[in-house]
Image 1 (cartoon, helix red, strand yellow):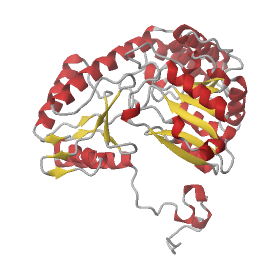
Image 2 (cartoon, one colour):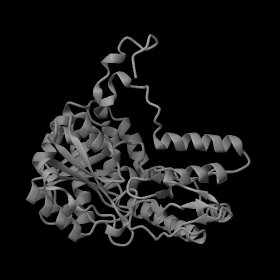
Image 3 (cartoon, helix red, strand yellow):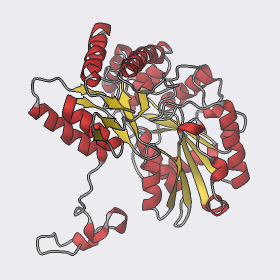
Image 4 (cartoon, one colour):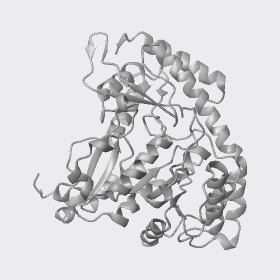
Length: 413
């Protein structure tokens, strides 16, 4: 593409990492934008038909009342008005108490924990701690792309490790070429895994630790969904002997505490990595509002909150699995997260789908059933149970309506 007279004078100044002179001229549409457009069209074409939205990926409840009251109380204190920088001690202390109570993990709240304004910025900053041009970050896919995006921004390379059902949705570490392992500095993993719902085992984490030592690679474990673990008690990477020596685990207040939008989490693990992250962070932001951190400390010290959140989403997932099985989906209760990851239908009647995106678009347009497609490692659809329903009766009605709409589509798998 060439620069035209209608372009702003600075069109040629955009950094190559975001497209250079071609920035803003691409025709590719991000899949979530495609879903939003399809949802708007379905609502416009069929105003009489309620949108059944399983595409949402954020908690549908407000934070616990005790947490909201703590925010109000702390927001009215003059001492909380200023910059938090790398975090207040009360939040770090609460995070350490939480890790000890929930996982039996002992952490120094001064040197081994640092807050983040939500986990997303942490995944942007951690590559800046380690990645130079030509270095490699190993990323599991499908998954959250931010650490990979920033690796590329910094001149590094991302090597994608597909999560295949036949491997239990674990990466094939043994299959990584020696040349790649030699250049790799980071391995980013995520368990319970979004979107597959797979949960890690101690044996898997032991293999990851051995891999880190053998190849001198730092591990970043994304624990955003850790409290939404169903088959076994939540398992922290840091519970496994040697984990703290090779990396960090990033926790979020969003999923397990209904604090979506509050933007708070913490990075925990090896003190030198935490220190380096804190140094980068200190040059990137001035910390989350102290009142938010005090409120989050209240949440971390209230053990029943994540139990209530987990119970609700487990119940909803069980209902969704039963509903989708009635219309032909081959799916089972996930081990964790509030997502159900199921193989996409190959056709609806005589209409064939080339991939999961095509199946997803068809479901939205034809029956106003919204879900998220993933084609990174096979054709799958992701259904979220974070839909709006005020009670179990509304949940059951939504499931019945979902079955009724999908049953007549003659889906083929």
